Length: 318
Image (cartoon, rainbow, N blue to C red; front, side):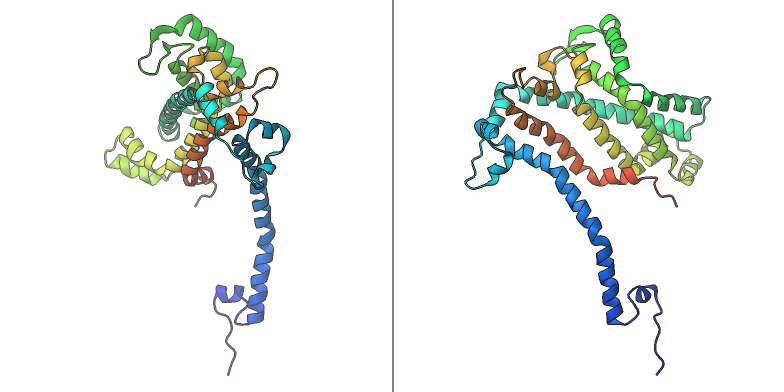
C-alpha cells in the first residue's frame, strides 16, 4: 500500500502522522514561547510591586511603617488597621478633594472628546480652504511646553475673564481663577491638540465607501458623524478618554496656578500638603495615594478592551 503524504498545512506543521515529529514540534513551539511568557509575567510582577507595597502599607500602623518594611506585614499574625484611611478621609479633607477631582476631571474629559471628535471629522472628511495648514498648526501645538502658557493664561483669567458670581451647588466662582469652569476650559485647551491628532488619524482610516453611500442617500455631515463615525470610533474614543482622564486627574501644576481656594483643591493638591516640611505624617501618603489611584484603576480596567483596540487601530490595514 502506498504511503499517504500530508495533504494539509496543519498536517505538515504537525509533522505529518508521525507521533515523534508531532511531539518534537509541540516541544519546539512551547520552548520558543516560554521565555516570552516568563519575561511578560516577570515584568508585570515587577511593575506590580510598588502598587502592592502601597496597598499593604496603607493598612499598617504608623509605628510599624517607620520600623519595618511592608513585606513584614504579610507575616503571621496579620495586624492591619483602617485608621490611616479614616484620618485621611475625615480629618484631612480628602473626601471633599476626591469630589473636587471628579467635578474637574469628568467635564474636562467629556468636553475634549466632544470638541476633538467634531474637529477631527472636519479635518478627515470635510473639504475647506486651509484644512491641511490648520491641522499642521494644531499638531504643532503639541510641542509647546505647558509651562510657557501658564502666566499668559493666568493674566487673561485675572484681568479679563473673572466672574465673581458664585456657582450654585458645586461652589466657586462662575469663571476665572478659583472656578471649576476655568479649570474645564484650561484642560480642554491643553488636551485638544493630541486629541484632534489621535482621532483625525483614526477617522481618516475609516472606509470611504461608507461615507459615499451615506452622502448619496442624502445624509448630512452631522448625521454621518453621529450615526456612522462615532459608533465605529468607540475604541479610539475610549482610548482618548482614558488618556485625558488620567492627565486631568493627576494634574498638579494647573490646579496649583488656577485654584487658590483650598475648598476647591483636587486630590493632587491635598496629597502634597499631607507631608509637612519636617516629613511627619508621611504614613498618610499611602492611604491618600491609594484613594487617588482607585478611580483611575477602575476606569482603566472597565475600558481596557476598548483601550487596546484603540491603540492598535490603524496599525494593520487591509
